[in-house]
Length: 407
Image (cartoon, rainbow, N blue to C red; front, side, top):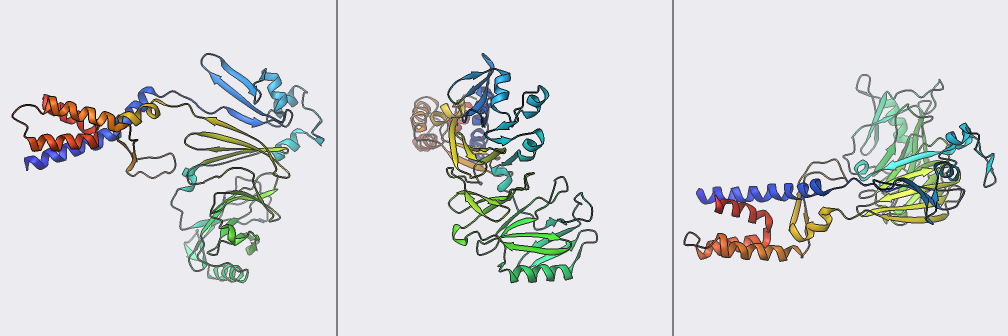
């Protein structure tokens, strides 16, 4: 029983230290830092960004390293700072041959963000559905929800009853259009805090993409014509103010596409984007889209033409190496955590260290063998087990062994 208690104690200590020591190192040595705010300029045809630091304060540059004053920076990003320019009577009448007014710019501007935490979630069994063509101008809060199995079923949320008539109607129309249940994934935004409603983008069992919404209580179902061979796996409905696009799609090879309202599909000229691990941010205007794809090492920013979706430029920013990145490969054989930036689940996660940590592990094992284990109280068998365990578990086992031997 005593031997079991010791083993349990040391295992508990290893688990706690593998969780706390990396966190403490990161907490003690971390420095605040973010990637610079970056946009593509429709004036200079280059990226422009804001860099801030303790020593130099806030500085404004373009990709060539040219520094700008605040007023100059406003002028090279007129679609972002249009209110400031308009208030000072500095907003031009035309840019790149296009007429611009505050209303035109505001109508064309949009922001879209999707993180891995938004994708790696448990999908709800019920999805609310709105009336896309209400009697009055403003959209109304949804009063119905639907679920999908081998068919679609509508539920009235006011009394929690199944609307058999509407369920049968939608199910019939969807199957007539070629929708194959069960559904793989869908995306919608059932809120009245938007200008209009486009319902849902749905991917059926055969990887075909459908546009489904409710108009005057009746089903609106269209197959978008996206090739099933692409293997679309993730969809995100957009509903931007300019009403040009319908959604963003990613396929099995992590290519990113934009689907216009006329159901034309355009592959965006960027590197791979994995919704399960990357964060996508898009800031668009009437001239260009600035797309930022963030990973654990940094941010890659792309600029594409807002009309043709042609590639314009790209820029890479790598995060500065943190203390944890710098020293963990020499100190920690593995790290235990319970949360992640990629999802919202709390569960044990183990990330293995590099082979460089074996150097420290061997040093600690030798130190333990010749110091803490010397004397008649430690048998050869105990020395061997302790040494081998320290070679594997490293500092996580060395600390509790040393503390107990000294006590």
